[in-house]
Length: 416
Image 1 (cartoon, helix red, strand yellow):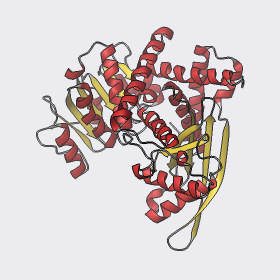
Image 2 (cartoon, rainbow, N blue to C red):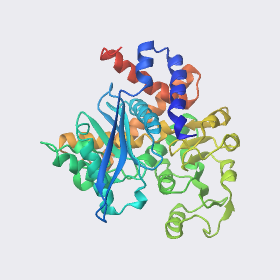
Image 3 (cartoon, helix red, strand yellow):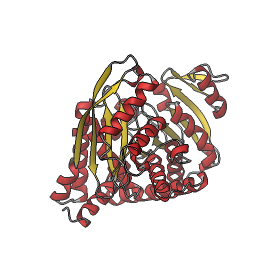
Image 4 (cartoon, helix red, strand yellow):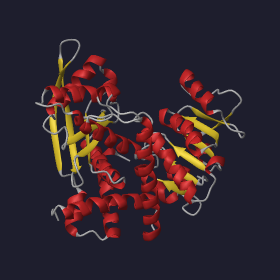
């Protein structure tokens, strides 16, 4: 989908859901567009002594449920239209997981691959200086997104602290552990997705320990999900995996640890010993119990989606299917775990980090995993019940749960 039309498409989908929910015109109008938008030019020094200015923005969709939280993207294609859509999507996701948070998104229009480490630090600090009035406890929190990292979050949190009378660790989440980050953030998305699979197959009365699965997109997320699948579900057999260069398969199952090592050493799954090759589109059509889609956004076409034969499809990455592919997935034979539900680990664990910062405390990984498990289990159940009650697909049901909660908060505040 063109970045130019992504927010328009998101609004159209929102309108459909508002009709299903019977939202009053005030709530529907208020939640359809961002509450606040900011555009600021940011200037930072280059290593050669020159200075560079880049356009940046920060978009806050809704704070009805609480302070906003959302990604910061560094990308030459990071237009404000895409950020508007992502800010709204994050608001619905936080609400889906019953978190007291709203949604936001921001970006700097640049190619970070062209910048040195020192230049990236100056850009991060310049961004923090430009938006210092927005960031912190009770305000807005930046989290890692496209080409931003825990280190970038550390620079932002530190710059906000320098420019504030009191430390504001809540200016950023996803920080390194040494300065207020949290255990459990490294695998939060993959762990949450696998828990969602576990709860979904339980509802479908499948044996979690005997599932076959495939990974479409064996990058960092895909590798982590593959390793966690057997640990969380008590077993399973990885039949195939692919990356941007090709795929491998083995009817008796691929050794996940060995395949992960091979991928890290060679940069691809191709050439993995004792395996056959498989094309990306062939992997999607495999008859497996679970298919994890972890490729780049809108990688799977409508035609490819129509060939999916997996019992459960888990969208491990954001928007892996083109918008029109949803209706091509056979709802009678396949259960979809949509991205807004499957990737919820990122917002659940980010919230845990903010709570620890506010309490000046640090929780164990086991405690954070338990909180995540409870949140995912609850959301899976509520999405399934909403889908059944309204006779809609799981993606629409997940959006409905989130949007309805934000609308309820708007009414409780007297904004509508």
